Image (cartoon, rainbow, N blue to C red):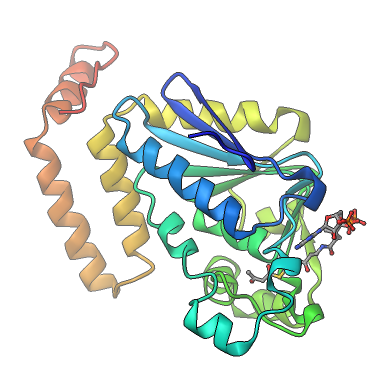
Length: 257
Ligand code: CAA
């Protein structure tokens, strides 16, 4: 598959996807979505890949859904076409995805970063849900995911005023896991992804699945789910290897079995 709007590379056991539509600050149109889905599905299917990094440019991770593509749509177009629902498929990627965010992550760009498993921000990152300034509201999960990340008061502030949050505020609020100098952003994200990818693949996927369940279930059901999949990990050779390596004071050699 040749891509026109993204760049796709592998670095060892890490898949690196770079949004590459600089003329529109990586605005997310249907072509970008289509290519992202092909690339993430391919990485999901590739047993040699353990984690993915998604990034943009230094100026913009993504400045939102493509306003010009949406501008002339009617209600019927939006409803019958189930506008933006394709992004739910991106959020169902099974392997961990780190969003490495520099510059603007606005509207759908902020929402895309939040669909990833965690966000590492460059020190120039700016997050926002400015849809209200266009006479609309978030449509790729912003009103729901941002509220879960930063709480009601700040999510209301962001959605109702359309103001941007800088990297420091985003880290203080829990939107971002860490901030790094923008020049080191991609390398730092690749390092974190390589660390993840060095572990047992089934354990990686089960950790991701369990943390995501915390957003979907009551605490009692979530704890039960965690306990059950925790038990299932004892069926893996990798559990035997990981614990034997600890006891023998050596590095484990995981075989994803
Ligand atoms: N959609 C389409 N094109 C976009 C875009 C977007 N979201 N954001 C930027 N662009 C285009 C601009 O139109 C411009 O193209 P032209 O050169 O052809 O005019 C080009 O990218 C460069 O942008 P600017 O000249 O505006 O760059 P700037 O540095 O002056 O400003 C910015 C940067 C503050 C991010 C500004 O571009 C901006 O405000 N963009 C829109 C942000 C926004 O409202 N995002 C929400 C979109 S709606 C949404 O995402 C809904 C949802 O929930 C899914």
